[in-house]
Structure formats: C-alpha cells, structure tokens
Picture: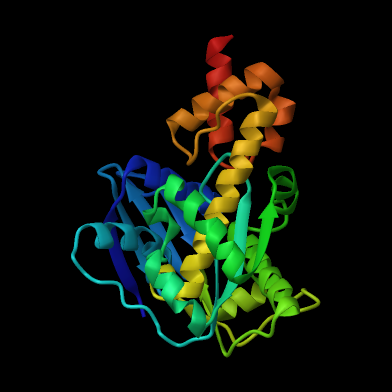
Length: 299
C-alpha cells in the first residue's frame, strides 16, 4: 500500500526531521530542498515548506509531526488505552544537535491511574520544561522505570555503524531488559512506533537478549499512560543533562537544530576548539557542516 501524507512544517521541524534521517539523503527532485529515502518511505521537503511522506510506512514517519498540530488545533479529548498494567517506552533528544539521547521505559498499574489523570500524563513535547521538572520526579518516585542516557561522545561512536532508528531500537530494547529485571513486564508492552515491527527486530538480530511481544503504535504517548510517563521522564533526564552540560562548559546550549544552534555551536568551538565539539553535539548532523562554514566566514 502506497500511503501519502502532506504536512506543512516549520523550518525548525524540517531541520529536525532531516537531521534524524540524514544518512538516507539522496539527490532531491526539482523545486525541493531535500529528499530522504528511509525504510518503506520517501520523504520530500519542498521550498514551499510542504513535506510529503510517501510509502508503506509514511504514517509512521509523519505521525511525529501530526499529533502536536492536531491536538492544538482541535478540541478532541485524548482517549487512553485503559488496559492496566501496561509498560511503555519513549525517547527524547534524537532531533537535538546538542545533548544526549534519553530513552525511558516504565510500568503503570491500576493503582497509578489516579496519578496519571491528576497530572494529565501525555506527550512531553506538549508540556513546558518547567512543568516537566515538577511532574517527572513525582513519576520517578511512584513508578517502576528504566532510564538510559546515551551521551554525545558515545553517540558519535555508535552512529558510525548504526542509523538513528537502529540506535533507538537498541536503546528501547535495553530499557525493557533493565525494566523486567526490576519487575515482570505486563502483557501489554508498547513502543511509540518509529519503525515497522519486522524492521525493529531486524535491528536487534545480533543482540544477545531481545524483549519480544511488543505492541507498536504511532502517537502512543497520548494513548498509553506508560508511554506518556516514559516520555516525561526521558524529557526530564534530557533537561537535567543539558543543565549539567551548561554548568560544565559555562555556556548556554540551544535545544533543537535551528540556525540559532549553528551559531551556538560556533561560539562553543571558538571558546573550546572544534576537537571538543563531539563531547556536546551529534557530529553527523547537518549542523556540523554549517558550523564549519560559519567559522570560515569569521576568519
């Protein structure tokens, strides 16, 4: 089945999407800025700002940019899957040039439902960082969870032999391995889908231990309490890590992958040298080339 989704994305959203899958970049067609040929999908970004997702898995890749706009522009009430207990996982930081990738998996039981409703647990992208920093520690005290943080220096090593989806799959799998060592996993285990099931497990084919019987669903952070809670804990870990980076390097790091990030990285290199950039940034992102050009202009 050839599915097609057309979305109008901001420049920041376009850059985030490109950075995550840039290793799949190909020569773009006329009137387009870039094109990505990822697994079971072709993503084309046009100069008008429209981004077309076409292919069997088009909905999987487009969903990350559909849920925010839909929830803001409608009065639709989010309907959660009420099957409890449930386990869920989500990741943060894959579209940010600076900072680590954080993946969390957690278990939500029937006795936790009141807590989930009280704090309106859902996608961390729709909640302010200040609220995340208030709510996430409460969740961490109440829920059984596993949190993995992949720092920039390690990311820059593993990305040489793994694309972003492979890295995410391996981190999600390890998070569930760690989680079930703390507590048996419930029958319902959910991953916020970023790849088809077959592709996900193909990434894990050489892993010594693989957690199976996982349910994959797009927009899962707003449908399953466990995925939403994991999203918030992962976001909290990302914010905390970024704050620690700022203290260590005595400068501010801009989130995302925009032009402001490029200038931020240029200032970092001027202060600490290009050889230290790999400690705070994802070097395979397009931003690295932009930083080099900015530095050349300043010479």
